[in-house]
Each structure stands twice: as C-alpha cells, then as structure tokens.
Length: 367
Image 1 (spheres, rainbow, N blue to C red):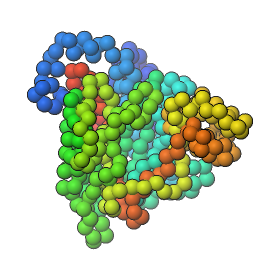
Image 2 (image 1 turned 60 degrees about the vertical axis):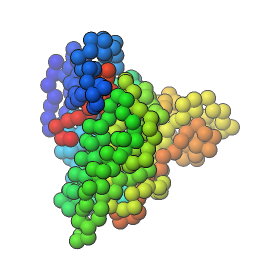
Image 3 (image 1 turned 45 degrees about the vertical axis):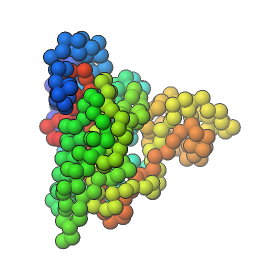
Image 4 (image 1 turned 180 degrees about the vertical axis):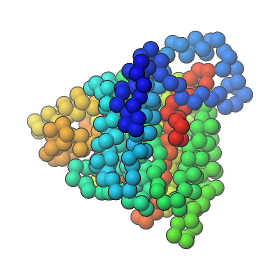
C-alpha cells in the first residue's frame, strides 16, 4: 500500500488501496418512516453484499475523482488556458485510474463552461480561451471503472461577488441529495430544490438578481456505460411523479442562473456520443465507417470530445463525424447557454441508493 504524493498526485488509486476496499462516500439514511427499517434489516444487508463489487468499483472511481479535483483546484487560476487545464485534468485521471481501454478511464470530456454557458463546453483543438478573474466556471468531469460512472462537478469563481450564486446552487444540490431516496417521487425533489435555490439573490456590479433554477436542466440516473439512463431529476416543481428505486445510481446536479433560467444550444459543438447500437449503422463513406469503428472501439457509448479524436490521429474528422450524426449513429451535444451577460453555476454529486442506505459516493472535504 502506497501513500499519495502531494501537491501533485502520482500514485494510482488502486496502489493506495491494495485490499480492493476503497473509501466509502458519506452514508445517509433513506428519508421517510417507511424506510426506517432498512438500516438494520439483515435481508437488505445480504442484498448489499451481493453487489459489493459494483460498489467498490464506484468507490474506486469516486476516489480518483476526489484526488484529481484536489489537484485541479491547486492549479486552476486566472490566466490558465482552458485547453491546458482540461488536458491536465484528463491526463491525471488517466494516470490515477490506470487507464485501460473501456475498462477504466474518463467517463466524458471535462466541461469548463463559462458564465452564461451552463454545460457541455470543452475547448476544441485551437481554442485559445483563457480563464479570467471575473469568470464563473463549471468544472464537470467523470470517472469510470467497468462502466460504473461517477459524475461530479463544482463551480470556480475568484470574484467574491459571485459567492451567493455558488452558495445557492450548492445548497440546492444538497437539498436534492437530502430529499433523494428509495420510493421518493422525482417531482418532490425538484420542488424542494427550486424552493432552496430561489430563496437566494446575488448583487453583481451594484445590481441585484434573483437566482433562478435552470428549468430545462436536470439530474439523471446512470447506467453501465450510459451517462443518462432514462430517469430525470428535475430542479423545478412540476416534474414527473416517477419514483426512485432501490439499487439505482443518480447524478444529483443543480444549475442556478442570474439570467432567464432557460438554456438553449449555441456555439461550436465539442461533445459527441455514440447511440446504443450505433456501431451497426451502415455508411456509404468508407472514411466515416472507419471513424465509427474507432469511436465504438475506443469510447463505446461514453461521451467523447473532438479534441480526443485529434489526439487519436483523426485530425480531419469533422466531415465524417457530421455524417455519423446525420446517419443517427452519433448524437451531438452543443453547449447549453442562457442569455449572454448572465452567470450560471453548478454543483453535482453521484449517489447510490443501496438497500440499507444512500451513499454520496463523490463527497469530499471540498464539497
């Protein structure tokens, strides 16, 4: 068993925990009297033991996330280029997780959406964007072991004026986590999140703005190698009355905005993802077919970035990638933006609804 090196971590996480038992996240009881028996139920504990390997894989991925983000927080400063920042984060994920094809590695591109851009921005090759003192940046990256994904994000702001915006979103995310649990209705979580989020306001450059939940963004459940697996966790009232179920994995994420509280697709796209079964698509172009084969082998149904294709040697891929999108084999996920001039923030954790309790897998000392 080796100890991690700091300030730059260089020891793979599996070498720090050679027994295969990785640090648990924060354990909380499921809400509601109906769930009170779970914590001490021998039947539920037996069910939990049956899924121990999956839980350890998730804890492994979560520990990699914690150590990489601690490292990232040490070098994210005004003046850093976003391409350099995301490359450093992604290289460190690969090093600490001991990347091995689709078995372990990055779960999706590192998001670093700025200001009015809420999600799905990462720099493409040649992007010269530099982080400034007055930016509000959402850092969102994922790790995976055997397709068990941990999805976790935080917001960086150097200017203290934005602190109430960040506090609103962090508090709303933790309210969502508190409300989540087995047999809880998704609509009830959304209502609780919105109530907390919209109790805040923020003064920026002498003007007061109410903080709004971005109503068309939401949390989601996560499946093996599938980042959005069917259920959505709203962050406003009026969502579906579908219930969370035992054994499910959820990303609880909230987004707050000083703008309209609605996002739409805009700007150049950097995030793409092959649809399940997309590898079976027949294409007329041999080059497009070759690119699809590479995507399937290298990323499967995990999201990938255009700059990763450049790194893989496919530096003239855009025409062929667009053909894959048009054929329905690959989906594009452009940046999601509120109105220009506003500011958005995000906080996110991955939680597991175990039979006996819920575990906030990605919880750390930082948030």
